[in-house]
Length: 96
Image 1 (cartoon, rainbow, N blue to C red):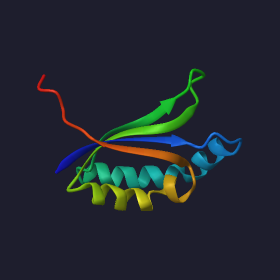
Image 2 (cartoon, rainbow, N blue to C red):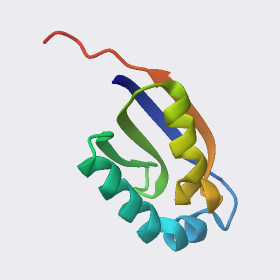
Image 3 (cartoon, one colour):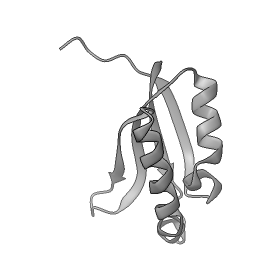
Image 4 (cartoon, helix red, strand yellow):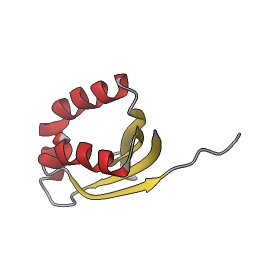
């Protein structure tokens, strides 16, 4: 398995939070399944200074970048138009 950091930023339009909340339960159901399968190691919402959700950061483990892309293409936050800017980077843990 390869490790990746996913930084996914929500849209900044007036309906962004509404889209997030509409897709949230379906996203969490899928995230729980991926966590149980060992693909999501850690995840959470990015917050702005006012503590509003503006995106997500995930540490994931997949066999390849193509598998990450395949998962992202079907995630409810992607299909629901929540995540508007997604960055995926390989990750190597520090030996601490």
